[in-house]
Amino acid sequence: MGFRDLHRFNMALLGKQAWRILQNPQSLLSRIYKGRYHKSSTFLESVCGGGPSYGWRSIQAGKDLLKKGLQVRLGDGKVTKVWSDHWLPVVPPRVVQGNVGVGNIRDLNMHVEELWKPGIREWDEAKLVQLLAPEDVEIVKSIRLSRFANEDVFVWPYTTNTVYTVKSGYWVATHVVEDGERIEPPPGPIEVKKKIWKLQIPPKIQHFLWKTIAGAIPTAERLCSRILNIDPMCQRCCLYEETINHVLFNCQHANSIWRCAGFTQFDRSDISLEDNIRMLFQILEMQSLTEEKRFLPMWMSWMIWKSRNDFLFAHRNVHPQNDVEKGVQAVAEWFIANPSTTIQERRICVTPTSCWEPPSSGWLKCNFDSTYRSSASCMGVGWIIRDDKGQYIESGWAKLPQVDTPLQAEANGFLYVVQRI
Image 1 (cartoon, rainbow, N blue to C red):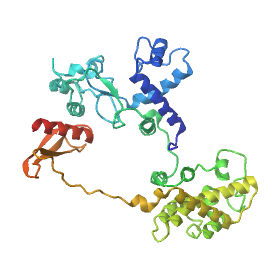
Image 2: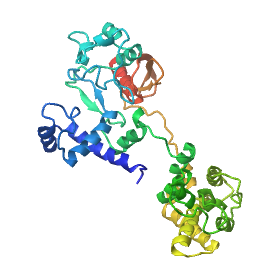
Image 3: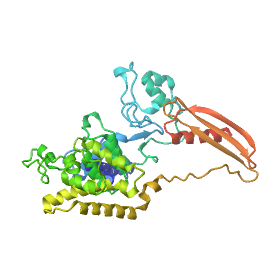
Image 4: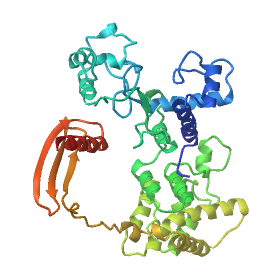
């Protein structure tokens, strides 16, 4: 289904419910919860309370995830607190840092509107320099204040439309991890795992390969490491411990399957599991082989594991050639059912030709483009105006205050050019 951590996926789903309550405070569910659990506080300030229902406890868990990525878009600045709310346009969201000289004299109930000049929505630079850390002063000055927005609103900066989605919530749950929540990742090189998830193969084989490189396949050796009282030896050859590398690549039966499939690269006991997995990707890049032949090793690793399970649990000892024939048939059926996933078609990239189109007769046309670089201190915009015959009328460029995203740069550039001409 596209996710690898069921617990965090559930948190992302619950985050969606918390987002709905936050965005629709007048809904029936929101009003019921407010009357029962947080009469005198906001939803974000609420806690489980005494004797909470299962639904409320679950939504509280989703709210904790939501608060990690929630950000305030400033309107009138009347309700957003300077020192505790996430109103800086940075990802991941964080609170503003105070100037070293401010110390403990800061007003914790200070609102963002108090950082503006009296009676006008413009930043008071003297007050910013006095209260905020120097690096945050520049970030705050880059925020363009709306002249017409009535109130501050919560947005989700991990989507282009600033609306929470389960997909983006899952990304935050798996990537934006606080220090106290950090856990050691499963073993195995990250770059190989990323390649596995990009493969256009059945998800069950993707998961199997990922579990293989992560050491999560339940071989006898792995089960013994869990203090289970079982024989760690390979039950097929009875010569070596049944490690993941052994059962998939080094066992006599596995070697027979690889040779029948036409791959002799794996007939070496001195190669590690990681190197054998990398060998699968090297075969995938061999342009001298047909496409189905290049993908066949991915299926064969799965077929070898199935053959091992059939031998242990169903007491079926299938000839290696039969396993190879099943693997070849499975690859062929996959490409017939998914013709658009072939490498040749994925590499085709048709770039449509573009050329300037003149406006209607008697009209002028202005083309513009904005430049944005996150590390720069400003953005830029350039424009050119031509008539219906393509004759040059005017052009120019300008430096503008830095913004947060390329999309904002395009919008800011458009606004400037329209006002300029």
